[in-house]
Image 1 (cartoon, helix red, strand yellow):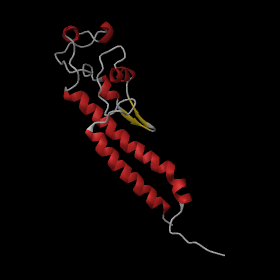
Image 2 (spheres, helix red, strand yellow):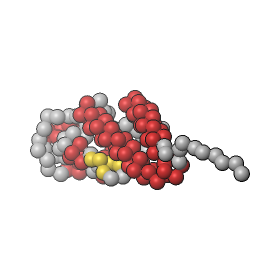
Image 3 (cartoon, one colour):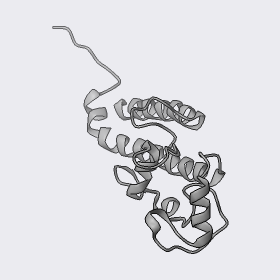
Length: 148
């Protein structure tokens, strides 16, 4: 009979996968939230239309809703609601519903403030670097979990 000894256990790694995944998802979500807030506050998004600028100065928000008048013409920043709504949650991140409409350009001008697109076709440089780091951390965590 042949006996094979190993210094690793796939079962140990498998049993720790949920914990490892939660850690990785949490790290990714934090970067997505930070990056989105930074992009919104940067003023680099598609400029507002002249009509919207006039509306803001008169104290009108999207759909004619009354909001405090402002001279801030930075897109997605008028009330601060979107940035405040960006949060890391158990399985990723969340934000106000209208943020997704702006990201995808559904009924409003498209303003991609998330560091990736819905189909993952575009990544910001931050996310590319993060992806590499997280992949390395993920691999290292699995490697450690496999050790006997």
